[in-house]
Image 1 (cartoon, rainbow, N blue to C red):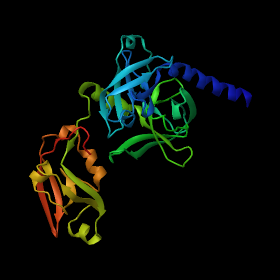
Image 2 (image 1 turned 45 degrees about the horizontal axis):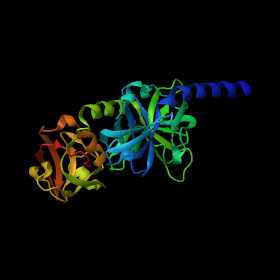
Image 3 (image 1 turned 180 degrees about the vertical axis):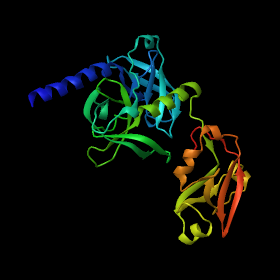
Image 4 (image 1 turned 30 degrees about the horizontal axis):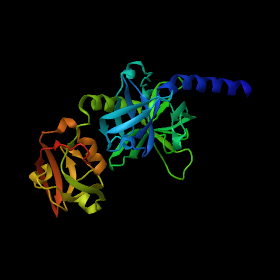
Length: 311
């Protein structure tokens, strides 16, 4: 038992030695709220959660050695709860940084280590295992985030934005959420998702997505309705409201319509439609099949570039 514990401790401490110098504390300049982040490039770029930086552009970053630097938001995507910030100092050329690993190689039961600043306690380390892979979690905007890593490495408020790393010290996730009043239910955004989002935030400052300009909710379909229209699904999107001068309005969509198909693909709910509204569809006409009363209609919509923080 002693030798097993020693081997386990050696793995964790070695990973911490690699990771700790690159983990930072993030707080607003006026001292309101704190979170975590980590340097992931040698020139001072930091990954964290979108909800950590909120809408405030000016931040203060405390490095592992206690040095404080000013930082600004380079890119922010609330739908994936990720943000990239940049320290404003010549010292960023000398900062340590972490590599993003391959989250697709993770195995359930694998050792993972979380670092961050929970409840203001700087550079706190917790360890656990990958509890599950491929979870879905709803962001604060209401959009579903896929490919979430579940872990029992303990997280608390303030851990948000910190790294979840493997035994080699490579980042396999960005810690993002806990389930309140539960034990051992913690979640991280998979590093492969992080890599994709971060590259676009660095280049464009946001993630481009297409949108239709409507509010909807997922509702069940009556069995007689699915049979009458030969629908493969048993739920659809009820249009609750349509924005004025939006792509949906231009296509003639109305409150009360039931969207059952987008560009030939059945959609059983709002989350399914969100997954289809990628940046590649901006400006490209698409068919929308809908039920209006007892009729099934098809209209053509041209998705637009979504506003930066649109749902």
